[in-house]
Image (cartoon, rainbow over all chains, first blue to last red; front, side):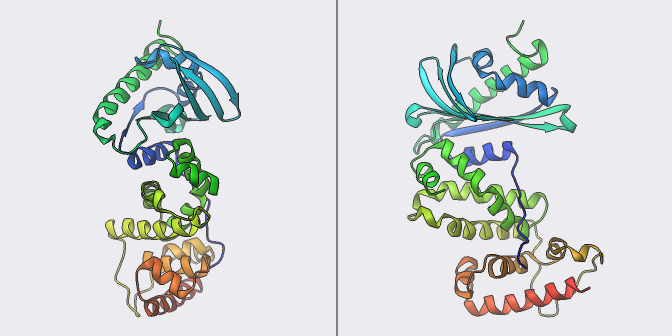
Length: 157
Length: 162
């Protein structure tokens, strides 16, 4: 029975859920948006402009370098290193004190979008923060949904 | 992959994600050979959660694939049992009717077998583990591996030639 191995990949939301389930100090929430996948993807690719729009705790983002999928940026004053690709953004703060990720999956042939966000402290002993991060993740998703459904990509008008 | 494992063990989330990406085809091949459809994806997901939770206990990063394989087989069987798809093995287990054309496909043939039978074929014939190694992965005696493998191969041949 040689050669039955199949290339089998998980979608990006399942990968984000794995991280959240494995790291107790983090939370992950997901929902479906009545927004075309391409539009949601385009919105999230431009994190430099759009992250401060939907995240109430971020007021300034500066992308420092971008080499393929690897991105270095500064959010407020804090340096981050990230992995950004189609439908996938995962950022980690210097010192591994904080991590945030967003994943997108097309639904209904790309007419709708399933989105998940993961956020928290990827260290042991921070489980007690999970409910707090659940709330901040929901607030971010509310912000993304608001931007995409009311004002289109970019800052809400 | 060893460097990725070491960084993930140190708590690097980006390395954890990279490790999932690196091992996805391998884990997917094992899980989907034992449980099919969405259950296969559930098994993959649960395998990686366990892998990341226990990663610090892995002393030899070079041995990550063998270590992950044990977890993948265990989780796939657990998902299969939870979904009630494991039927008790018996020497005279009835052969399910399958499409003759589909029988030409190895995967289709495997899909007609029990998860326990698939697991033993994956470990012994696909991954090339010895009886003792397969016994350790499945938490059974080497003699049980031998008899299970004999029955699984017979069942496979029977379905394949149907």
